[in-house]
Image (cartoon, rainbow, N blue to C red; front, top):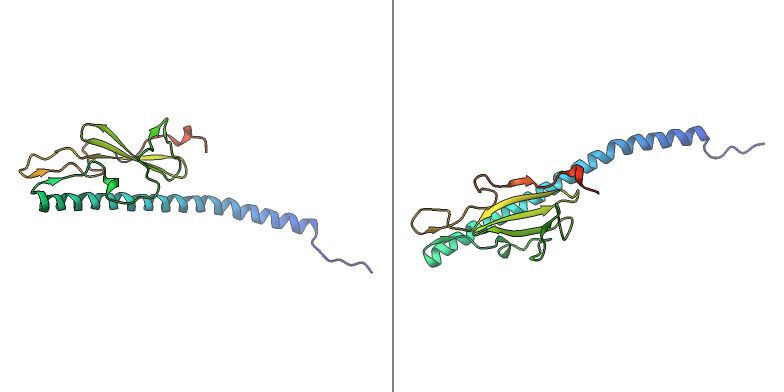
Length: 163
């Protein structure tokens, strides 16, 4: 009598096809979820920096009698991936994925950069110059609120990037 233990070739092919279909559906959904999570974490960091800048300004007013913004908001908040030596060069950040950079672009103006896992680089403008004409107010313009500036603006074209 013949022993028929195991799977036929047709059964194995069918299982492989089903797994391929599941993978074709699951991978894009997973990538979308990862991108959404990364954008949410990025927003949380920017919101923390904005709040820290406002707290700093209020504290300066209480102690010195004048509102003022810090030269670098990253000195107020500990952000994973931030380095003072990181820079935006050639469409990417030198330190790579997940990193943050702060670059002074002109007198009293700066840009904050963040590189996501998919190599897209996003930016926000920040002004620590005296942007106010009010008495006792030397405050600048908070992160992402600079008129005609970057407010979570993508800096590079993903089609040009090699992943």
